[in-house]
Every structure is written in C-alpha cells, then in structure tokens.
Length: 134
Image (cartoon, rainbow, N blue to C red; front, side, top):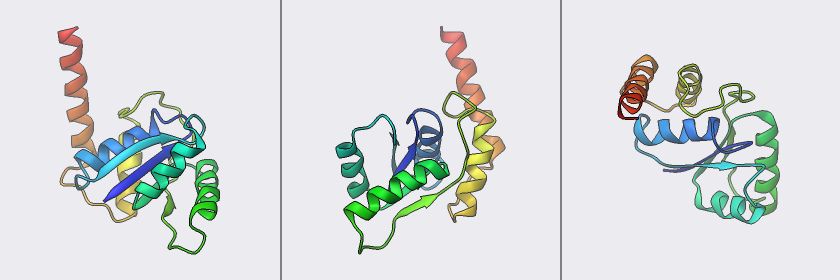
C-alpha cells in the first residue's frame, strides 16, 4: 500500500510513522510530508499517489481533508487521523514517540511482527553504533 504520512514540519511524527510502516508494519511504500513546508502542488501530487493519507494531529487532518475535498470530493475518503498530538520529541523514532505511534497504528488495524519495546531497543542499538562510529 502507498501511504502518505503528514505532520506540520515533515520531520518527526510523519517520518516516524513512515519508518514504522516501511520496516515494522507490513513493508508499505510510505512517505513523510509537511502540511506547512511542502508546496500545495507537491501535497496534491502526493495525495493523488497515496492509497491512504495519515494525518498526525487534528490541525493537519483538517488541512488534508480540505485538500481532499478539492481534489476528490466524490471519491472514497482516504485521509485518516492518528492523533499523536503536537511534536514534543524533536526527532524521528524518538524512544518515547515509538510506543505512541505503534499503539495508534495497531488501533487502526496495522500489524507488526515486533512489539513496540523491541522496536525501541533496536533503535537504541542503532544510536549506540552511530556514537561508536563517530
């Protein structure tokens, strides 16, 4: 499935969801985008490419819903809300963000072979390797 994950800045929440969907929740073709920083033409193109659009908070959801009304008013709706809330993590795949994102994905029917705590541990091992290399 082609999934567009949208947050305000396109760097933390949407990247986390896209990463989880690619590597832990079914190998989806997932991209992250910014409702604020991507050009409206780019967002429209990405919307049309996607089978599903995930908005990470109510403000972003309303923005994407408005785009959907302009682009495809008579089609089946493909914008959903996974209300992660405002970004307080400042980096994608933050250990505190991963369980929130995983629980929301699972509540919407996505399945993972790993538990969220295994994903956090794998991420922390990757961070440790990067520190050793640097």
